[in-house]
Image: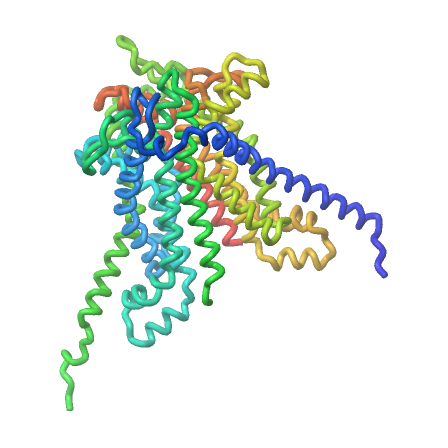
Length: 289
Length: 303
């Protein structure tokens, strides 16, 4: 029999202490957020109703609901998706299926990391300089959405590239051996097998774009507008900027409207995100290879 | 029978489509580079007359007088703004680095099965909370809490925005650090375990040294995130120009200055150009941080 020596005992105790310490750190990281969510739900929950969502805000948001910002955010996100998904998917196809290992590919990867890492307010300055001023779109949904699209491009690229690379090489080789071209292989074999992974990336991008404030606040989102936009060259209200305005700049704002708006925004973002994660877990379970 | 060259030429419609697609996806591929260059070009285009004209670099980096709207004598000293950003980011890292590395070690090395998956999902959801919501939390929840706990007149300042920023940066650092630890080959762990090492000994003497470059990249990216965060800092920092001497002092960050003032600065005026100059500065600093993180990670892959 092996009896545990004193040294052994000590080592095991030390291990137990560290495990408990790191476990505690993890819990402390997660707990504040759960508390905050709880507070938001407790204080904002009573304000949120069907009527709150679909009534226009009045008196600078002190009364009424959040119809304009809600619809505005949907406009911004949809236009941003139309712009970024094709470019992002093309970039991911290039990186996964075509790119050789050379300096250019490395440069592309570095550029993607930087697009994700540049501060959101710098993206906003770029949006102003490029889309509002240079291309003369003015303060418009189009300018704001294009800024958002460029900012969230890395989300689509990274998710799509990962799901393309997860398709086994043998699938492609089998197809090439039948005499198919590279594109025929990608379209008929690689993309169908990766499409659900790409979709999770797109959902993630929706969630990211819906929550952003800085990139849209000088390019297309305005603090108050009594009507809904009818085209992409018009400005709009947006949920994120609306929350900023009513919590930061409007005096005597009723608490429940602030908490209610915050709750709706965070729910939109977290539900999208949770959906993307759930979808990913489900797909992992279903994988055929 | 002789075949003509034309018979051997198999370039049908499919061949041309294939070539066209290859060209199209290549354009998509290099778009990221085009956009990064575009960002630099367009913010420089708006700000360069100021950078090479009015701007006094000495004043920019050493003066705390940021008075761009002064009628007769506007001054552009960014020192207080840089100090504001640095103090908030510094406090955030003080909070976030130990916790994220601890959490990353726990998730990567100790947690198993469902606990591990659940923790990873929670951390991912944490990372998804929009910055304006964090700012709202700073204003509506943290502000009264700090006033009550420390008996100070205003709860907006370095402490408030530092904690908020720490909570924002932690999930990103945790995710990247956990990836870095997972990238350490299992063979290393098995070899150490075969020598009779306990789990903690394996982590401290094998896994952490092997993954240290990745951990450094995680910390760097966290710093970059804190440095560039805009809305949360704008809302929770109090936004007054100050060289902070205590955690309760109100400060103003570089990013928040742009966000707060750009709306009131008419295009082409000095003030507007000065804000773009701050943007160029932010762009260059974050570019360097990201580059450093990239180099750190590449070190791991070679090893």
